[in-house]
Each structure stands twice: as C-alpha cells, then as structure tokens.
Image 1: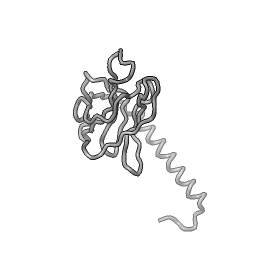
Image 2: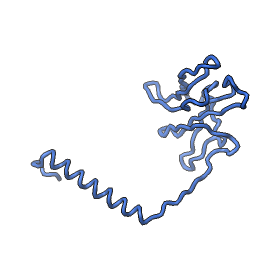
Image 3: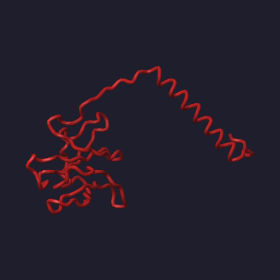
Length: 145
C-alpha cells in the first residue's frame, strides 16, 4: 500500500525509475535470445492482396484487388473484406474475397482503412468518381452482407 504522505512528484519519480529498470532488464534479456523470423502465408498466393488493413476487434481485414493493366478507369478494382481465423491467422475465405465492399477503388492512393464511429466499423477508401478524380468513400458492413 502506498504511503498517503508521498508527494505526487515522488510517486511519478518512483514509477519512472521502475519503468527504466524494467526496460533495461527487458533489453538485456532480449540480447540473449536471437530473433527468428517465421513468416507464414495466410492468403492464397495466387491473389495479389493490396494494402491490407485490419479490424483487430472483429477479426477482419480489408484490402483491394487491381484489375488488368488496361484498367484506366479503375472499374476492375474491388474492395474486399475477409474474416480472419483468430486461431490460425488465416484469411477466411483463403483467397480473401469474403465480402465485396466496394468497387472502382483508386490504385496509387492510400489504401482502404478501418474507421470506427457511432454506427460501428466502416471501411474508408478512395473511389474513382469520374475516371480521373478520387473521392473518399465509406462502406458500412451490416450483418453478414
């Protein structure tokens, strides 16, 4: 139990000292263990997953596909949402194309990202409006649709 007569400055100083000790002991310990990379494929390698973003609360990811090289109007660029198996980390379905959440996604801008508001999670992305202009769009996923 903390002494009620400690000043706020003494308490903060004590906490900072403890945090520094913990950081030093953690870094010293980390130096003794070699870091080993264990990459594992979690989506179908034949599908090009572009700029994924993750909804960690609901185990989902969003990403987009890019159509053919002649796709100057972005008409083949689709926005997808896939579930993520919390036990394996794999996309469900494995190709990542669980739910079509948007079309005409503009390639070359910032990719889709999750946003959270009063209406729940939504995916924000840049949508091709005129074949030349990208506008911010929002896709709200309701239930299993």
